[in-house]
Structures are given as structure tokens and as C-alpha cells.
Length: 125
Image (cartoon, rainbow, N blue to C red; front, side, top):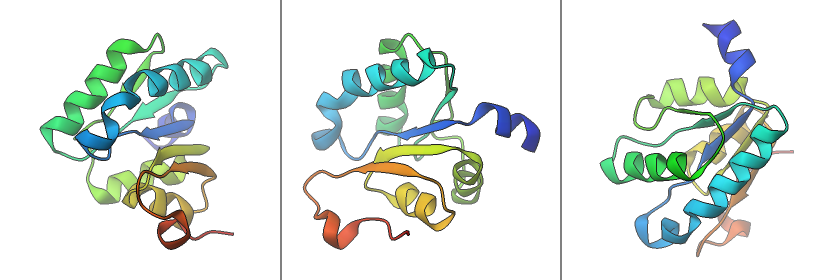
């Protein structure tokens, strides 16, 4: 399984934070996934177990032309950490996943909403 993950997980998206903050972000995330997929990269989506998060990822998946791997609601915290560690790049909102990415040394972009990045950004070099 590890070799399969190394081949598949290149760009990692966690686009959901809460409905109020995430509502208008479906199309931009879909376009971003298309951009990476057009460059030959595989895209993985994930979320927590909440049904709103899972539906949010399904909505994005319908908007994108990219073939994505949707693991929404299917990973434990330990599995999430392992997946992020094997990825080349991380894109997500301010969440535990962005902090995991920083902790395991994965380059990435964390998008912030109303929270202050100075206080809540992932700590990395």
C-alpha cells in the first residue's frame, strides 16, 4: 500500500472548514484541482466524518474535471497523518491537517479565514 500511496498522493486538499466560511469556495477549489491534474499530478481530498464535510467534497468533485481520490470521512487522524506525510504538497484550510503537514515537513499552503495566521499558522521552518 505504501508504494501505491507514493505514486498517488501528490497534492492534498482539505477544503472544508465550516459551511459559513466554505460556501463560496467550491468552484475555486475545483479549478485549483484541475490545474494540478492538468500538470499530471494526482489529487486527494479528505475531510472529517461530518456529513456536511463529506457532501462538500462530493460537490467539489462534481465541479472538477480532474479525477480525484476522495477519502472524505474515510480516514482516522493517524491515517490522515500518514497520507499527508507521503504527499509532496498540501493545500488546505486552517485545520489540524495543516499542522500535521508542518510537523511532518510537507510543503504546503494554508488558507486562513477569520483567524489570525500570526497566532494560528502551522509552525515549520
